[in-house]
Length: 124
Image 1 (cartoon, rainbow, N blue to C red):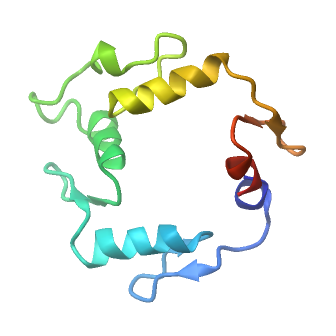
Image 2 (image 1 turned 180 degrees about the vertical axis):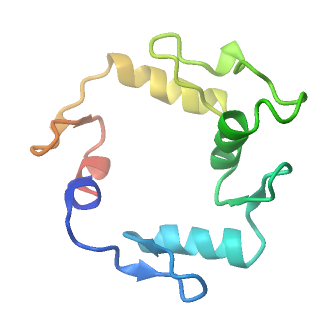
């Protein structure tokens, strides 16, 4: 987290096709597959390509909810966190998130004070 969120260092992994840069190599690989190899998720309204289905769904709801009557105006209540209102694409993601409201977060960033449940995320 500290290296990604607070570093002044420029991203190290750049796409040779379009120049988009990432701090992590796996994000660059996702980008290449989605954008340049046609394996991404495409918006049916504006044809923009997304690396993940979650990214596409978020884009459609935030950018096109008034453009297409088929797009839900309100997120389904079964995928919305009752504690903070955050919306998730699957029930399992919501369940994992909900547990974060009650679990101890022992790993804390010394720069921004953000807390994490998992050491791996804190160290990234």
